[in-house]
Image (tube, rainbow, N blue to C red; front, side, top):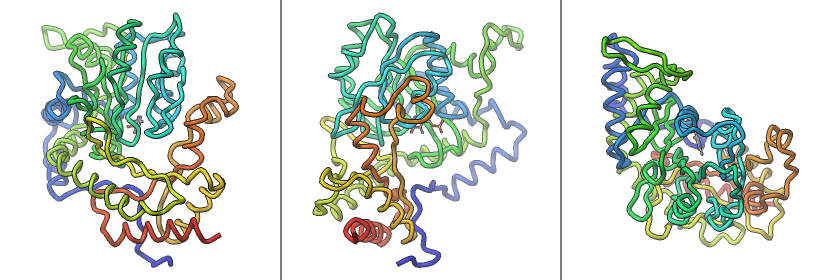
Length: 379
Ligand SMILES: *Cc1c(COP(=O)(O)O)cnc(C)c1O
């Protein structure tokens, strides 16, 4: 089955000749940081998301970090968040000695379950940090209402969700601050990079300083260091790549929805799989990944075998996500032993992310689906 030289990768970036020219154009100047490309990229993201301000930083994680610092969330503060996410969304809380208070996810859409959030709030809670998992937009209405009632900030991890929308609001514009990532496997890439979005001029201004050591421009063209910040600037080459990629955002979102629909058509009748729903109420999914789950009747242990058999057929797939609270660091630090968040854990044991990228061909989708079904049934 392994046709040599025809590996199907998990999620390679799409880089066009136009993208390459945009990066090379920057390299021919002497301005490689803090220049016009950054301003153009920031304006483009602000427009695409529908917010007043956007701040380019060198990763999504850096973006979450400056946002937390600017929001004043610090030592001992509790933030209610999801265990079913990439580790970055909780790690940034540890950077600030804040405490991630995990809440289980909805068993179907795998996003933070608003019904459980309120019960997790204590006198030390300062914020809620939802994640649009795999690009599926969270139903923010109930979370916004809880945040308002308890005076909490809403920090939106939209790192997987550029282009998603719910109730007419786009991902990145749903909270007090939103964060996008442009890592190479995301919908659009800058190599490494992130953007922090907000409507608050005050927060934006503070984050501009935090990105650059905590320094604030003075009237005479210099800087005064007002507080301790970071070195989180995004190079001009990356900003130019991002601005160029951003021009095709809509086409990318549409293309990825088509790929998800193609997988759905091929796998719908496979009783051994639970597929992601193609729609969300009053919303649009910008697909980051296409993740199926083994049906409850199958032994969870089969998952790793399926991934290994796909690998033997030259198809890359991943167990994506292992819940954060089960990571060794979190077990050691917080005493998690498994069993705390059953929905997240069940999904974590049964999920398989399939190859998913703009240029995947119908023949590749067909090969992935055939290999997947064979891997499940050949026992
Ligand atoms: C990609 C991602 C991030 C940020 O990752 P970086 O590699 O730092 O850009 C944060 N949260 C989630 C959920 C992600 O998927």
